[in-house]
Length: 100
Image (cartoon, rainbow, N blue to C red; front, side):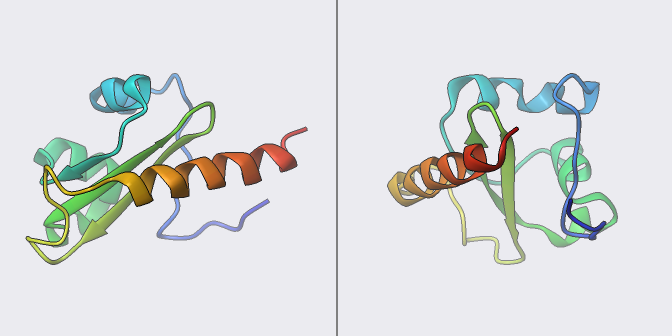
């Protein structure tokens, strides 16, 4: 398994903390831009105020990856998400190889 790291969170699929992300997980579409403070708090904890923008990448059947940036213009609604989708597909395929 992976050692505990400050950049990695493992949250059970039925955990109420994931409630604000249910639509993203269900739709399977990446989301880019500024998030509400309560979403940032779930994703980034004590460092949530440092994060200005986020790219959320749902991984169907696996989970969610969030990439945060200090740059307020790094991720924005309407930016192309093709690369994020391709990256997500590759990650899901790779992770399924390790599933028991």
